[in-house]
Length: 257
Image 1 (spheres, helix red, strand yellow):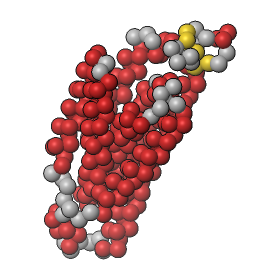
Image 2 (image 1 turned 90 degrees about the vertical axis):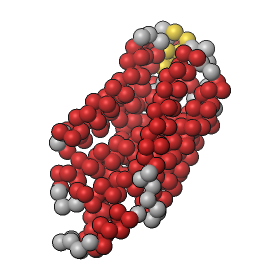
Image 3 (image 1 turned 45 degrees about the vertical axis):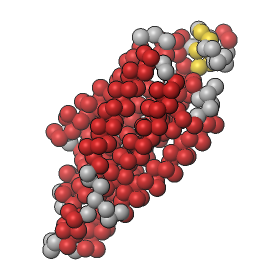
Image 4 (image 1 turned 60 degrees about the vertical axis):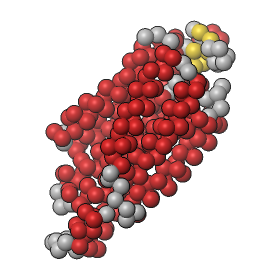
């Protein structure tokens, strides 16, 4: 990356060893936030699922075709119009987050990140109704390994992949539009194609975002508040890449209940 090399070779008040140490600490903070967000999403998803499903016939308000019994809370959450709120809330919130990010303090950005991760967890809780627990666990570990490999490559490569951004963004928009259309079409072939393309798009975004986040460090180094906010926004990008990769891989590899 020419831009990276020129920054790295410039004479600054910060020594090379200090920059390396600062970059390591910055990236570690990004990954820690991202991992904590994924953990929060998983916890919220499981808690919502636990409240929505019951094994007690006396408290069952409805039974799904796969035999799982829903509580009154589960019926309201997954079979009423409330399910659209559950689906759309994370999307609406992330747009709000992106719109307000530049004016947020690091503390407000961090709080918004936790709220978003919790909303995504509530939205993804429905996956526990569809896929077996073992396949969800297996796909999670596959996702984690894939994400780690792609992120390490994005961090270590000397190739400038900033040109991928516009192409990947267009691919992401296409995947989102196709997924919304397929909610009404219910085409299994289209869902398969969406998932394959989604995996490729989020795989590319993982490497691209990692390199971009690394480059951002050189723009905010020396400004503690800017670096703290950039760390959270970087974690948000990688969190979305991880979740997108997981959901699409689960669609392709997961075993249904």
